[in-house]
Length: 542
Image (tube, rainbow, N blue to C red; front, side, top):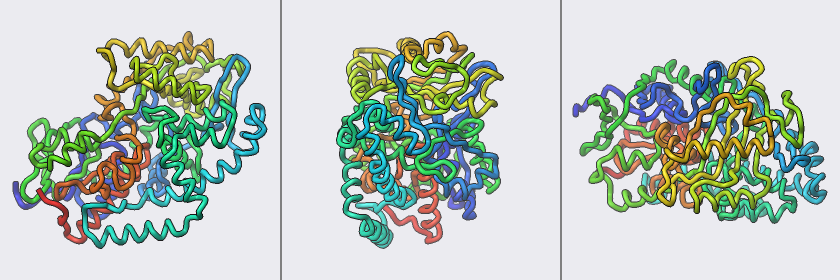
């Protein structure tokens, strides 16, 4: 390879974190090329047509975790991004005449919860207050580079450790204890301590299994619950919303800013190899034989894909390769988009004109035990016999997604084993599994099945093959204690730098993890820019 590089950075993967990282790098004056295997950028955050006249967010489907600094820095509102808050948080149909509707305000929620437990209604304010105090601490860490134990320059890690120590010193004793609970306990044990009513625990505990292939009583699942409480919509913390135009509107706005800053975007091209010589990573090889050279390579794909498919094994230390192969990716998620002739008419709250409950996250899982049984089924049988389903209907607030009077719904379903037991094959059971999901919704809204005009079905295998989500894992790696902070993706490589000089990581497989946040892309870009300003390629070389 030549000494002169046509690009300062070559970014592998045009998901939202790749776009964010590329934009920050270009904004710092670097020449950047971004390469995406699909014909459009956005990764899992895309909007696509799936039935004549109907389009929807294909994979990721709701907004909260997108960091406000990223929104501001990349001028996403200026590029057309508009996010509207959900009218209500969650709606849980329970039986033909019972339901729990979690509104926006605390008094509204307390009034609903009091129908099941006066004690729980009284406990809610303190629970929410302590959750927010813990969330505030974790939010402060989201845009910080983890202390990189075992690798990197001592000075940088010393300063990171000092910053972390100062933050810890400010935290009150009660909040420190709550932090420990959220990072180590199960969501079920935590919620059982706070509350007695099954519907409330289900409404709060659902977040603990979103994208997490585990029981709500699995230790560490409380952190997954906390992770989903870290976001905001238009300045309101803890809220969830819809991007008008679907999640693809986020990626489209990011692309506009990236191109405005000079990023060269190449779509429809597969990277087959990261090119490495004695100096480190020097570029990438494409499937069509082209070589794209760069002073550094930045991976926005799952770390497991990067190191097991794009880098020759002899270039990696055996222990590193062993550990990255053990990096745990498994989501248990089954994703559907459906075109509807009318809104669901729930037996417990009749009517198919747009109402408050239609504008919430509709959770079909009446208890934590129900969620746990769904997980056990998936482990044993491959699919839940009674799946957990969240139904979101964005067309109520966004009429661009469906013809007049009709609607689209996103169905995010758990638990479906990405690795099927007993010789089962996703090609054979995908459609029966989708039928089961439709039948599950129909139990609560008897008009639902007849209203389905068309559907898109994505099994865990489809999510892996289409979007590179290994094991169907929407987070690019499980959010477990051994894969968080400085250990994400591996201990010693938590500061966005790979084990090869000039190789960086910016996907959700790095801190702070999954969701449409933009934070990994933001943080990785900061580290790359720092290194380039220092002229540093000083970490471990091949």
